[in-house]
Image (tube, rainbow, N blue to C red; front, top):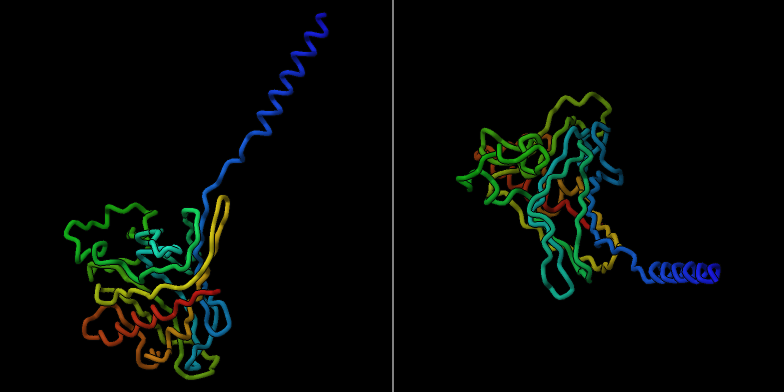
Length: 257
């Protein structure tokens, strides 16, 4: 009798345990979106301190490429906006070329962002601004090297390197170039990019962008010729070049479908 009762208890426990396991719902992980930026010159991926030739035939190499994107947002199928980030910094030298966000489940038709630091976060327009308020992990931290102390604001897009203006030469590169957009007038709102995708539980979506450095130097609207235009650091007397840097840097973002 005792053996019968014991077996009944064992089978009862196994039955209850089995039901509990079968009825469990796997934990749902939030959907994620990663955005990635790939700098290209010609048909080559741009890497720091590697030799290239630009669209003018000038040999050059890059020592730095950094930029701020702000107001990063997704456009949902119903035209509603899903904010992703107020401000992010991306740096090729520091291998910070992507960012990942948790996003709501649903269908999306596009993504948008602006190039630069918006006026409310850029110190000249914010009387309460103090760069010391940002810790080292914040995009606006002084440790990122993008704050113009003399200008009282941030660089928006910064590209630096060395070149020669003798086309197709293999000689040393004696000319330094440094093109830094900044100032509120050089903030650029980039038109939205079309991209359709949908995400559900546990999904991870990826949107990749090409930074077309050929377009940065030459496009249908303007030409930055390193023979004549090697330096812009916010000097008001050079604003025609500053406008070129702002416009061309905004134009070089291309979505990879």
